[in-house]
Image 1: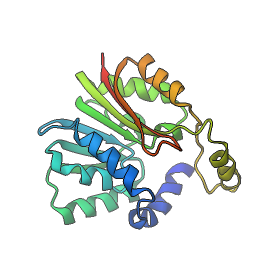
Image 2 (image 1 turned 30 degrees about the vertical axis):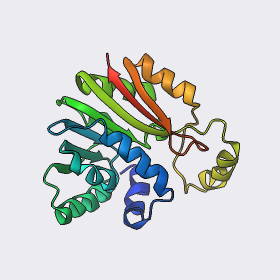
Image 3 (image 1 turned 180 degrees about the vertical axis):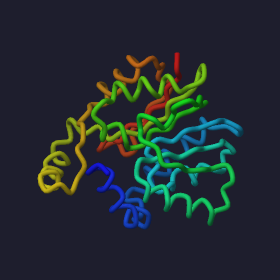
Length: 205
């Protein structure tokens, strides 16, 4: 087990019960995602955590498959799906690089994960390769390059090993990386704007 996997396995129980800090922004993002998902779509979620977002999107009628490299996160997500009776939502343990292996999807969701991985370009290329023609990438990514207050506040936790390694993007840099990976950006938004937490809908071209 890697150090990162152990970190998230340990965090899973608290993560599952932790309330959303910015409910208004979270609900706004969900509404925009719902606008792009339709019944019968095959959707992959990367780094789904304990499955809260996937389950909140079950009402779209899309078939959502949540994946995470943390077995404990997936265990909690599966329990929540069983309790909710969400037959169109499933969860499985999978490393990010292997989550889409051998499958094709109409949409891939990557929420709050791109800033936590080293090879963003490679991950975007894998997502592009996993999409059907005209398939969608729906992502949310904190872009903290210019938010010096947040960056400074994270430094002590990172030094103590209590915060996972992060990459600090600008909105412009992230959008450019998505375009360079073979996507046409259809919609963007920042929820919340002050962070910003950057929402992107992009079509594979």
